[in-house]
Length: 397
Ligand code: PLP
Image 1 (cartoon, rainbow, N blue to C red):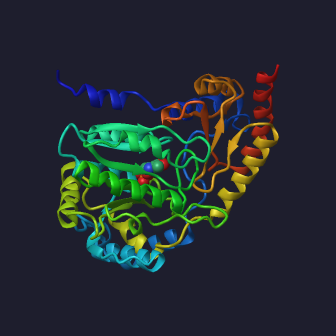
Image 2: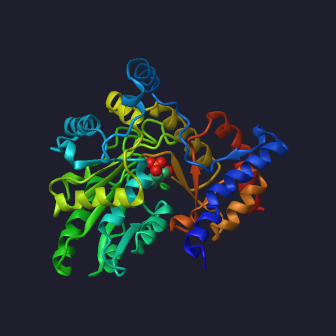
Image 3: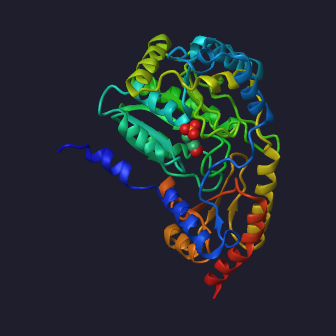
Protein backbone atom coordinates (compact mmCIF):
# COMPACT_ATOMS: atom_id res chain seq x y z
CA UNK A 1 0.00 0.00 0.00
CA UNK A 2 1.45 3.35 -1.04
CA UNK A 3 -0.93 5.72 0.63
CA UNK A 4 -2.51 5.88 4.08
CA UNK A 5 -6.09 4.56 3.96
CA UNK A 6 -6.97 6.57 7.02
CA UNK A 7 -5.79 9.87 5.53
CA UNK A 8 -7.27 9.00 2.12
CA UNK A 9 -10.64 8.51 3.77
CA UNK A 10 -10.42 11.79 5.69
CA UNK A 11 -9.38 13.71 2.58
CA UNK A 12 -11.80 12.24 0.09
CA UNK A 13 -14.98 12.14 2.15
CA UNK A 14 -16.49 15.61 2.40
CA UNK A 15 -18.27 16.53 5.63
CA UNK A 16 -22.08 16.74 5.65
CA UNK A 17 -21.76 20.49 6.21
CA UNK A 18 -19.43 21.00 3.23
CA UNK A 19 -21.72 18.82 1.07
CA UNK A 20 -24.69 20.99 1.96
CA UNK A 21 -22.74 24.15 1.25
CA UNK A 22 -21.73 22.87 -2.21
CA UNK A 23 -25.33 21.79 -2.86
CA UNK A 24 -26.47 25.30 -1.89
CA UNK A 25 -24.10 26.88 -4.41
CA UNK A 26 -25.50 24.61 -7.14
CA UNK A 27 -29.10 25.51 -6.19
CA UNK A 28 -28.25 29.23 -6.31
CA UNK A 29 -27.31 28.74 -9.99
CA UNK A 30 -30.57 26.87 -10.63
CA UNK A 31 -33.19 28.87 -8.71
CA UNK A 32 -31.46 32.14 -7.76
CA UNK A 33 -29.84 33.26 -4.51
CA UNK A 34 -33.07 34.75 -3.15
CA UNK A 35 -34.72 31.28 -3.14
CA UNK A 36 -32.00 29.33 -1.31
CA UNK A 37 -31.76 29.45 2.51
CA UNK A 38 -28.31 28.22 3.37
CA UNK A 39 -27.92 27.79 7.14
CA UNK A 40 -25.07 25.28 6.85
CA UNK A 41 -21.72 26.97 7.53
CA UNK A 42 -20.33 28.75 10.59
CA UNK A 43 -18.43 31.40 8.65
CA UNK A 44 -18.67 34.74 10.52
CA UNK A 45 -20.59 37.31 8.45
CA UNK A 46 -20.05 40.27 10.76
CA UNK A 47 -17.05 42.24 9.45
CA UNK A 48 -13.80 42.29 11.43
CA UNK A 49 -13.57 45.43 13.61
CA UNK A 50 -12.00 48.45 11.83
CA UNK A 51 -8.90 48.10 13.96
CA UNK A 52 -7.88 45.01 11.94
CA UNK A 53 -7.61 46.69 8.54
CA UNK A 54 -6.26 49.91 10.04
CA UNK A 55 -3.49 47.97 11.79
CA UNK A 56 -2.62 46.06 8.62
CA UNK A 57 -2.26 49.35 6.70
CA UNK A 58 -0.09 50.86 9.46
CA UNK A 59 2.08 47.75 9.62
CA UNK A 60 2.65 47.77 5.86
CA UNK A 61 3.63 51.44 5.98
CA UNK A 62 5.81 51.25 9.06
CA UNK A 63 7.66 47.94 8.96
CA UNK A 64 10.27 46.62 6.59
CA UNK A 65 9.57 43.36 4.81
CA UNK A 66 11.61 41.15 7.15
CA UNK A 67 10.02 42.55 10.30
CA UNK A 68 6.56 42.16 8.81
CA UNK A 69 6.77 38.91 6.87
CA UNK A 70 9.74 37.12 8.46
CA UNK A 71 9.67 34.05 10.71
CA UNK A 72 8.81 34.70 14.35
CA UNK A 73 9.91 32.50 17.26
CA UNK A 74 8.45 29.02 16.90
CA UNK A 75 6.10 29.63 19.85
CA UNK A 76 5.12 33.12 18.63
CA UNK A 77 6.44 36.66 19.20
CA UNK A 78 7.13 37.53 22.82
CA UNK A 79 5.21 40.78 22.33
CA UNK A 80 2.11 38.91 21.14
CA UNK A 81 2.23 36.37 23.96
CA UNK A 82 2.73 39.17 26.51
CA UNK A 83 -0.20 41.17 25.08
CA UNK A 84 -2.48 38.12 25.36
CA UNK A 85 -1.32 37.43 28.94
CA UNK A 86 -1.92 41.10 29.93
CA UNK A 87 -5.37 41.14 28.36
CA UNK A 88 -6.52 37.92 30.05
CA UNK A 89 -5.06 38.97 33.41
CA UNK A 90 -6.90 42.32 33.24
CA UNK A 91 -10.17 40.73 32.09
CA UNK A 92 -10.33 37.59 34.24
CA UNK A 93 -8.02 38.45 37.19
CA UNK A 94 -5.65 35.64 36.24
CA UNK A 95 -1.89 35.56 36.56
CA UNK A 96 -0.58 34.33 33.22
CA UNK A 97 2.85 35.06 31.77
CA UNK A 98 3.97 35.24 28.14
CA UNK A 99 5.66 31.87 28.59
CA UNK A 100 2.30 30.17 29.19
CA UNK A 101 1.25 30.78 25.56
CA UNK A 102 2.00 29.02 22.28
CA UNK A 103 0.61 30.88 19.25
CA UNK A 104 -1.05 28.69 16.63
CA UNK A 105 -3.00 28.79 13.38
CA UNK A 106 -6.42 28.70 15.06
CA UNK A 107 -8.29 26.39 17.42
CA UNK A 108 -8.10 23.35 15.13
CA UNK A 109 -4.30 23.48 15.31
CA UNK A 110 -4.39 24.22 19.06
CA UNK A 111 -6.50 21.12 19.70
CA UNK A 112 -4.36 18.89 17.48
CA UNK A 113 -1.20 20.11 19.21
CA UNK A 114 -2.55 19.63 22.75
CA UNK A 115 -3.91 16.17 22.00
CA UNK A 116 -0.62 15.11 20.44
CA UNK A 117 1.30 16.53 23.43
CA UNK A 118 -0.80 14.51 25.91
CA UNK A 119 -1.11 11.10 24.31
CA UNK A 120 1.26 8.40 25.46
CA UNK A 121 -0.57 5.12 24.81
CA UNK A 122 -3.16 3.81 22.32
CA UNK A 123 -5.30 3.02 25.38
CA UNK A 124 -5.61 6.75 26.24
CA UNK A 125 -9.16 8.05 26.02
CA UNK A 126 -10.49 11.56 25.41
CA UNK A 127 -14.08 12.42 26.23
CA UNK A 128 -16.29 14.96 24.46
CA UNK A 129 -19.73 16.10 25.60
CA UNK A 130 -22.49 15.77 23.00
CA UNK A 131 -23.44 17.78 21.09
CA UNK A 132 -19.84 18.43 20.00
CA UNK A 133 -17.83 19.83 17.08
CA UNK A 134 -17.45 16.74 14.84
CA UNK A 135 -13.77 17.40 14.08
CA UNK A 136 -12.94 16.42 17.69
CA UNK A 137 -13.14 12.75 16.81
CA UNK A 138 -10.76 13.34 13.87
CA UNK A 139 -8.26 15.23 16.07
CA UNK A 140 -8.45 12.70 18.91
CA UNK A 141 -8.07 9.57 16.80
CA UNK A 142 -5.32 11.16 14.69
CA UNK A 143 -3.42 11.87 17.90
CA UNK A 144 -3.60 8.12 18.60
CA UNK A 145 -6.25 8.11 21.34
CA UNK A 146 -9.75 6.69 21.66
CA UNK A 147 -12.72 9.05 21.29
CA UNK A 148 -15.48 8.71 23.90
CA UNK A 149 -18.75 10.59 23.98
CA UNK A 150 -21.07 11.64 26.82
CA UNK A 151 -24.68 11.62 25.58
CA UNK A 152 -26.41 15.02 25.45
CA UNK A 153 -28.54 16.73 28.09
CA UNK A 154 -31.29 17.75 25.68
CA UNK A 155 -33.11 19.84 28.30
CA UNK A 156 -30.53 22.52 29.04
CA UNK A 157 -27.58 21.38 26.88
CA UNK A 158 -25.30 21.44 29.93
CA UNK A 159 -23.43 18.25 30.98
CA UNK A 160 -25.05 14.90 31.81
CA UNK A 161 -22.93 14.22 34.91
CA UNK A 162 -24.19 10.69 35.67
CA UNK A 163 -23.16 9.61 32.17
CA UNK A 164 -19.81 11.40 32.41
CA UNK A 165 -19.08 9.69 35.72
CA UNK A 166 -19.79 6.28 34.15
CA UNK A 167 -17.48 6.90 31.19
CA UNK A 168 -14.40 8.05 33.15
CA UNK A 169 -11.96 5.19 33.78
CA UNK A 170 -8.26 4.62 34.36
CA UNK A 171 -7.53 5.33 30.66
CA UNK A 172 -9.23 8.75 30.69
CA UNK A 173 -6.67 11.39 29.78
CA UNK A 174 -8.74 14.45 29.06
CA UNK A 175 -12.16 15.87 28.48
CA UNK A 176 -12.82 18.46 25.77
CA UNK A 177 -15.40 21.10 26.62
CA UNK A 178 -16.68 23.85 24.35
CA UNK A 179 -18.67 26.75 25.73
CA UNK A 180 -20.28 28.76 24.13
CA UNK A 181 -21.08 25.61 22.25
CA UNK A 182 -21.07 24.72 18.59
CA UNK A 183 -23.70 23.39 17.74
CA UNK A 184 -26.19 24.04 20.59
CA UNK A 185 -25.35 27.68 21.39
CA UNK A 186 -25.46 26.78 25.10
CA UNK A 187 -23.09 28.42 27.57
CA UNK A 188 -22.00 26.25 30.51
CA UNK A 189 -23.10 27.91 33.74
CA UNK A 190 -20.76 28.47 36.68
CA UNK A 191 -22.66 25.70 38.47
CA UNK A 192 -21.85 23.27 35.63
CA UNK A 193 -18.16 24.22 35.73
CA UNK A 194 -17.97 23.82 39.50
CA UNK A 195 -19.69 20.40 39.30
CA UNK A 196 -17.38 19.36 36.48
CA UNK A 197 -14.23 20.36 38.32
CA UNK A 198 -15.39 18.63 41.53
CA UNK A 199 -16.19 15.44 39.63
CA UNK A 200 -12.83 15.46 37.82
CA UNK A 201 -10.93 16.06 41.07
CA UNK A 202 -12.77 13.15 42.71
CA UNK A 203 -12.25 10.86 39.72
CA UNK A 204 -8.56 11.81 39.37
CA UNK A 205 -8.04 10.59 42.95
CA UNK A 206 -9.97 7.40 42.27
CA UNK A 207 -8.10 6.47 39.11
CA UNK A 208 -4.73 7.57 40.49
CA UNK A 209 -3.79 10.22 37.92
CA UNK A 210 -4.79 13.68 36.76
CA UNK A 211 -7.45 14.29 34.14
CA UNK A 212 -7.05 17.37 31.92
CA UNK A 213 -9.78 19.71 30.75
CA UNK A 214 -9.13 20.93 27.21
CA UNK A 215 -11.27 24.04 26.92
CA UNK A 216 -12.00 24.86 23.27
CA UNK A 217 -13.09 28.51 23.28
CA UNK A 218 -13.43 30.10 19.84
CA UNK A 219 -16.82 31.61 20.77
CA UNK A 220 -15.88 32.94 24.25
CA UNK A 221 -16.83 36.57 23.48
CA UNK A 222 -19.91 35.82 21.37
CA UNK A 223 -22.59 35.83 24.08
CA UNK A 224 -25.92 37.60 24.54
CA UNK A 225 -27.90 39.23 27.34
CA UNK A 226 -24.80 39.66 29.54
CA UNK A 227 -24.39 35.92 30.15
CA UNK A 228 -21.16 35.03 31.98
CA UNK A 229 -18.63 32.57 30.51
CA UNK A 230 -16.54 31.35 33.47
CA UNK A 231 -12.77 31.27 32.85
CA UNK A 232 -12.14 27.57 33.38
CA UNK A 233 -8.53 27.81 34.63
CA UNK A 234 -9.87 29.56 37.74
CA UNK A 235 -11.97 26.53 38.67
CA UNK A 236 -9.77 23.61 37.69
CA UNK A 237 -5.97 23.64 37.75
CA UNK A 238 -5.42 21.04 35.04
CA UNK A 239 -7.04 23.15 32.32
CA UNK A 240 -5.45 23.79 28.95
CA UNK A 241 -7.14 26.48 26.84
CA UNK A 242 -7.39 26.30 23.05
CA UNK A 243 -8.43 29.70 21.71
CA UNK A 244 -8.96 31.18 18.29
CA UNK A 245 -9.55 34.68 16.89
CA UNK A 246 -11.52 33.16 13.97
CA UNK A 247 -14.92 34.10 15.40
CA UNK A 248 -14.31 36.96 17.87
CA UNK A 249 -12.37 39.06 15.35
CA UNK A 250 -14.09 37.48 12.29
CA UNK A 251 -10.73 36.27 10.94
CA UNK A 252 -11.27 32.56 10.18
CA UNK A 253 -9.25 32.65 6.98
CA UNK A 254 -6.23 34.26 8.61
CA UNK A 255 -5.62 31.33 10.98
CA UNK A 256 -4.56 32.72 14.34
CA UNK A 257 -5.12 31.51 17.90
CA UNK A 258 -3.22 30.08 20.86
CA UNK A 259 -2.68 27.28 23.36
CA UNK A 260 -2.52 28.34 27.02
CA UNK A 261 -0.75 26.07 29.51
CA UNK A 262 -1.09 27.76 32.94
CA UNK A 263 1.57 27.24 35.65
CA UNK A 264 -1.03 25.49 37.81
CA UNK A 265 -1.28 22.54 35.41
CA UNK A 266 0.51 19.42 36.62
CA UNK A 267 4.05 19.25 35.15
CA UNK A 268 3.28 22.52 33.37
CA UNK A 269 6.84 23.21 32.14
CA UNK A 270 7.09 19.70 30.71
CA UNK A 271 3.65 19.99 29.14
CA UNK A 272 4.49 23.38 27.59
CA UNK A 273 7.66 21.85 26.11
CA UNK A 274 5.55 18.95 24.78
CA UNK A 275 3.13 21.47 23.23
CA UNK A 276 6.10 23.14 21.51
CA UNK A 277 7.28 19.66 20.48
CA UNK A 278 3.88 18.74 19.05
CA UNK A 279 3.82 22.09 17.21
CA UNK A 280 7.19 21.17 15.75
CA UNK A 281 6.18 17.61 14.87
CA UNK A 282 2.98 18.76 13.17
CA UNK A 283 4.63 21.73 11.44
CA UNK A 284 2.60 24.30 13.38
CA UNK A 285 5.45 26.70 14.15
CA UNK A 286 5.72 30.49 13.64
CA UNK A 287 2.02 31.37 13.28
CA UNK A 288 1.38 34.12 10.67
CA UNK A 289 3.65 37.02 11.57
CA UNK A 290 1.40 39.87 10.40
CA UNK A 291 -1.63 38.55 12.31
CA UNK A 292 0.40 38.08 15.46
CA UNK A 293 1.04 41.84 15.22
CA UNK A 294 -2.63 42.55 14.49
CA UNK A 295 -3.57 40.69 17.69
CA UNK A 296 -1.28 42.95 19.75
CA UNK A 297 -3.22 46.00 18.51
CA UNK A 298 -6.77 44.58 18.37
CA UNK A 299 -6.91 42.31 21.40
CA UNK A 300 -10.14 42.75 23.35
CA UNK A 301 -12.11 43.98 20.33
CA UNK A 302 -14.78 41.98 18.49
CA UNK A 303 -17.01 42.28 15.45
CA UNK A 304 -20.49 43.71 16.15
CA UNK A 305 -22.11 40.95 18.22
CA UNK A 306 -25.46 42.80 18.19
CA UNK A 307 -25.88 41.67 14.58
CA UNK A 308 -25.78 38.02 15.66
CA UNK A 309 -28.09 38.76 18.58
CA UNK A 310 -30.63 40.38 16.27
CA UNK A 311 -30.47 37.34 13.96
CA UNK A 312 -30.89 35.01 16.92
CA UNK A 313 -34.00 36.86 18.09
CA UNK A 314 -35.60 37.02 14.65
CA UNK A 315 -34.94 33.32 14.03
CA UNK A 316 -36.01 32.14 17.48
CA UNK A 317 -39.22 34.19 17.49
CA UNK A 318 -40.10 33.23 13.91
CA UNK A 319 -39.52 29.49 14.37
CA UNK A 320 -41.26 29.20 17.73
CA UNK A 321 -44.26 31.06 16.31
CA UNK A 322 -44.38 28.48 13.52
CA UNK A 323 -44.44 25.74 16.18
CA UNK A 324 -40.82 24.53 16.06
CA UNK A 325 -39.18 23.49 19.31
CA UNK A 326 -36.00 25.55 19.58
CA UNK A 327 -33.29 25.82 22.22
CA UNK A 328 -32.65 29.53 22.76
CA UNK A 329 -28.89 30.00 22.43
CA UNK A 330 -27.01 32.27 24.86
CA UNK A 331 -23.87 32.29 22.76
CA UNK A 332 -22.07 31.40 19.48
CA UNK A 333 -24.20 31.75 16.33
CA UNK A 334 -26.01 28.44 16.06
CA UNK A 335 -29.52 27.40 17.01
CA UNK A 336 -30.53 23.84 17.83
CA UNK A 337 -34.01 22.87 16.68
CA UNK A 338 -35.87 19.60 17.20
CA UNK A 339 -36.49 17.69 13.98
CA UNK A 340 -40.16 17.00 13.20
CA UNK A 341 -39.50 13.28 12.79
CA UNK A 342 -37.24 10.78 14.49
CA UNK A 343 -34.53 10.87 11.84
CA UNK A 344 -32.82 14.25 11.68
CA UNK A 345 -31.31 13.19 8.36
CA UNK A 346 -34.74 12.44 6.81
CA UNK A 347 -36.01 15.76 8.20
CA UNK A 348 -33.08 17.66 6.65
CA UNK A 349 -33.78 15.94 3.31
CA UNK A 350 -37.38 17.18 3.45
CA UNK A 351 -36.08 20.66 4.33
CA UNK A 352 -33.77 20.46 1.32
CA UNK A 353 -36.82 20.05 -0.93
CA UNK A 354 -37.77 23.58 0.25
CA UNK A 355 -34.17 24.77 -0.34
CA UNK A 356 -33.69 25.07 3.40
CA UNK A 357 -30.20 23.83 4.16
CA UNK A 358 -30.05 22.61 7.76
CA UNK A 359 -27.38 20.39 9.30
CA UNK A 360 -28.52 17.07 10.85
CA UNK A 361 -27.18 16.76 14.40
CA UNK A 362 -26.40 13.03 14.33
CA UNK A 363 -22.85 14.04 13.35
CA UNK A 364 -22.71 16.21 16.49
CA UNK A 365 -23.66 13.20 18.63
CA UNK A 366 -27.24 14.40 19.12
CA UNK A 367 -29.73 12.62 16.83
CA UNK A 368 -33.21 14.10 16.46
CA UNK A 369 -32.00 17.71 16.20
CA UNK A 370 -30.74 20.04 13.48
CA UNK A 371 -28.29 22.92 13.61
CA UNK A 372 -29.12 26.27 12.05
CA UNK A 373 -26.18 28.68 11.60
CA UNK A 374 -27.49 32.20 11.91
CA UNK A 375 -24.30 34.00 10.96
CA UNK A 376 -26.17 34.84 7.75
CA UNK A 377 -27.90 37.80 6.17
CA UNK A 378 -30.89 38.97 8.25
CA UNK A 379 -33.04 39.24 5.11
CA UNK A 380 -32.39 35.59 4.27
CA UNK A 381 -33.67 34.57 7.71
CA UNK A 382 -36.86 36.59 7.16
CA UNK A 383 -37.37 35.18 3.65
CA UNK A 384 -36.84 31.62 4.93
CA UNK A 385 -39.92 31.58 7.18
CA UNK A 386 -42.27 30.81 4.26
CA UNK A 387 -40.16 27.72 3.52
CA UNK A 388 -40.10 26.73 7.21
CA UNK A 389 -43.89 27.07 7.21
CA UNK A 390 -44.24 24.76 4.18
CA UNK A 391 -41.89 22.28 5.85
CA UNK A 392 -44.00 22.28 9.01
CA UNK A 393 -47.17 21.77 6.95
CA UNK A 394 -45.68 18.64 5.38
CA UNK A 395 -45.80 17.07 8.84
CA UNK A 396 -49.27 18.35 9.76
CA UNK A 397 -51.03 16.97 6.70
N1 PLP B 1 -13.79 24.43 17.69
C1 PLP B 1 -15.07 24.75 17.42
C2 PLP B 1 -16.12 24.44 18.42
C3 PLP B 1 -15.42 25.35 16.20
O1 PLP B 1 -16.70 25.65 15.94
C4 PLP B 1 -14.38 25.62 15.26
C5 PLP B 1 -14.68 26.22 13.96
O2 PLP B 1 -15.80 26.40 13.54
C6 PLP B 1 -13.06 25.28 15.60
C7 PLP B 1 -12.81 24.69 16.82
C8 PLP B 1 -11.93 25.54 14.66
O3 PLP B 1 -11.65 26.89 14.63
P1 PLP B 1 -10.41 27.55 13.89
O4 PLP B 1 -10.95 28.27 12.72
O5 PLP B 1 -9.84 28.50 14.86
O6 PLP B 1 -9.47 26.46 13.56
